Image 1: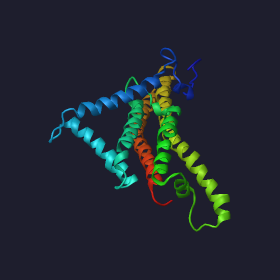
Image 2: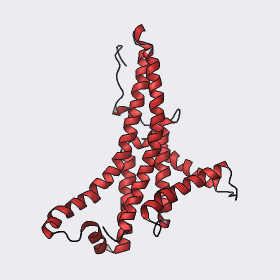
Image 3: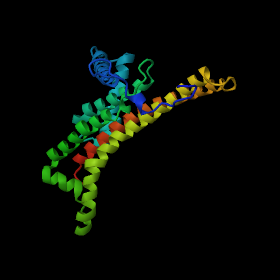
Image 4: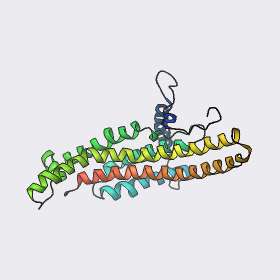
Length: 255
């Protein structure tokens, strides 16, 4: 805001200055998320009881959700067990970093920085995806399983389908996985900022007749924040589900 003119928030809001030595707020939040997740599961599983208390029940519910509703459903009952820790870690990591966007005083969804979801997708999910497929089928068998579709004429196969499958699995799939959560977090948080800062501008700088609209703007910000919370959970679920789906696809016997 300058000269009684409202300046809407933009991408610069997602690049806060370094706090110390080049370390920024998003970097600290990523580390904090790992500490929170590790502490949560270590503390709640320290003294397990047959009849769980509320915190043990919460931890078991999160684990069961990651194990049965994501890993088992997407990878299959035969192969899912070794990948439960990875799927659960992906779900909780993305979830906590998304929820930072609605935590008072923090209010910054880490996944709104494209570098973080891109790093998880490109450096964790897709190396695992291709590695488990090669380990299961061998390199040649894996490539054949992923890129060659039976009973397709060879000109169509080599000129159209194989290039399409290569581009899809080595470029579009990881990019789509990262951009999906990034775009949702970026857009949702930016929208909340627009209504919060807009309401503040109307209240402090607006004409007298426009000041009551500040209450409307703040109310919309609260409503959008509630919707954003739902989307944050949903995007964490989608990220983990797609990751498990890719692993299941790599392990599958057929394309």
